[in-house]
Image 1 (cartoon, one colour):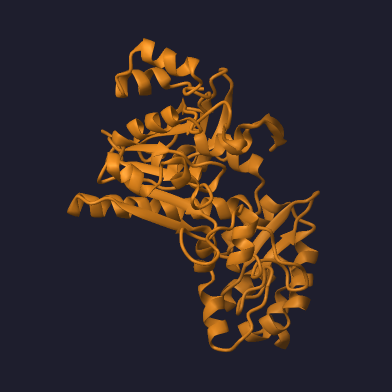
Image 2: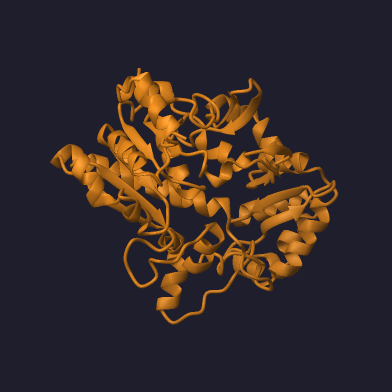
Length: 398
């Protein structure tokens, strides 16, 4: 039993989050991903910082588990030559620098094709490898803002929402799909190709309905937790400090059940709430009534009561509750991994299941910088200890 992408090797030059999340997803599917960094220029996300209740490289941990790590100083010609040797035994090379950086280093698509003619070369950038805006750098908040998703996210009377990791990871997941498509084509034709993923275009691709409305002459606006037709629909305060309950009522029967659970069955017969159209028209009044009830009930109790009555509802869980959830643990969506120092932590597993092959997901924790050089340089590239030592002395492997 093997993972579906077992036997696939990726030379991973990506940095930060969007590109690394792509290769992280592929590594969970079985690809051997070799992350390339140097002590002079490690991935910026390796830097420990206080986040998620602990001091450590939390963002890096999210996207580096299961990967192998080697050091290569790409500022040196011998480092570029070493990187090419690694690409020559790989199926995919991936990078997420500003367009032109890899070409200036001598590691652009044409240069890598010369050492591996069927290489699939993934580039992840803010605006793509071509076009008048291709020279712009960018991070996740820019992707959502520039692609229009931020403008459509948030409350109607508030500012656009700044999109962070969710934007990076969405870009990475789209890139992973594109890489698998390129691999499928290569299996049929024997040809590699350049895969050009523009993060802002990923953002725009999620705006289908709003873009259609705009094209038809309308002016889409931010709607917060509102729904175009459903009411009640939103997140309501539950009993306790910063505890919330999500409710979405789509049918009259669900509304009647909700009113009954609230102890106010008469609400369902009031003309202003009798139909879906009337409930939506009077949703501000309705939301106030629902919130008045939910604030008196613990979120889990309210969710159980409403679910039993056929009303779609659930507590809005914190990350602590998610990591302890038996359902997610059973499915491998949340797993425990061990770090090089022996400590254990929770990690987000692969968000899919396949019925054939080995179980996909995270096999190990975050790699130390250069941790797997004996395997990569010794076993895969066949370099002698003397050759490796010489490159270390010259700060090529550094």
